[in-house]
Amino acid sequence: MLKIENLRAGVEGREILRGINLTIFPGEVHAIMGPNGSGKSTLASVLAGREGYEILEGRVEFLGRDLLDMPPEERAREGLFLAFQYPVEIPGVNS
Image 1 (tube, rainbow, N blue to C red):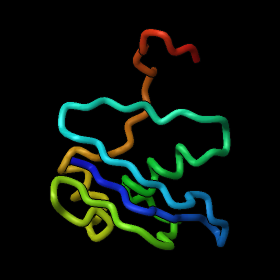
Image 2 (cartoon, rainbow, N blue to C red; image 1 turned 90 degrees about the vertical axis):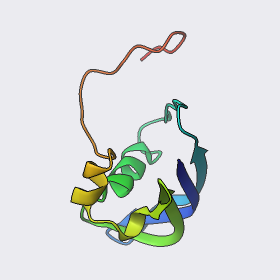
Image 3 (spheres, rainbow, N blue to C red; image 1 turned 135 degrees about the horizontal axis):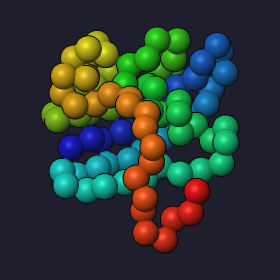
């Protein structure tokens, strides 16, 4: 399970994520959608542990562990990492 509670994060002194709350249970599939600049990539980068992002507040629990205390390599071993590819088609969603 991935549980995000009141996550606030930013980069270079600018707050981008402002209180994200999300719970994803095993077996669920979610799509993070929104206009350019809405924080989709920032959320993914923060969850993956990319450098340069500042966590201002909040908790992220992944598989019962504090994700924000895990180094990126450990997050990747647990299955949480960024891998860009051609997007999977989702019925009813246009790009």
